[in-house]
Length: 119
Image 1 (cartoon, one colour):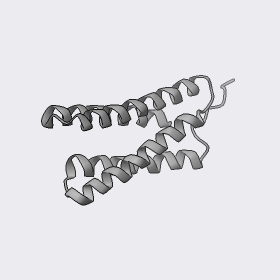
Image 2 (cartoon, rainbow, N blue to C red; image 1 turned 90 degrees about the vertical axis):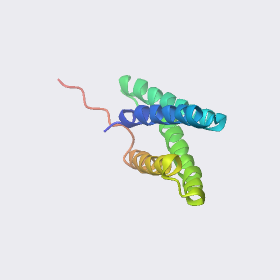
Image 3 (cartoon, one colour; image 1 turned 180 degrees about the horizontal axis):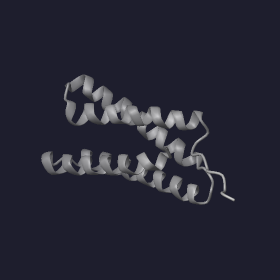
Image 4 (cartoon, one colour; image 1 turned 120 degrees about the vertical axis):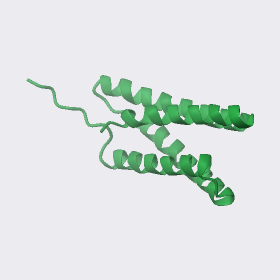
């Protein structure tokens, strides 16, 4: 499975979550954090997709995805431990931990594998 297949929906989920946090609580921090990290993750997924279309891999995109997911795992995990609230801290920490593991797996296996040209 290619990283952009999960990265773009993950980024969209982060953006939507930030927007919902803003609508429910009026929290600009939720909006900026969710939209900011979500936008960066979607951008990294798009860079990865475009590299894949050119039959290449993008180490920059994979590194950016991994760092953001790991940072969100840590920050939201700390927030969950403090507040014990599943929504949003526990949910974001859990999903981000899964994504971090996926990205580390992709790095360990050499990134997106380009299928050989059919002859």
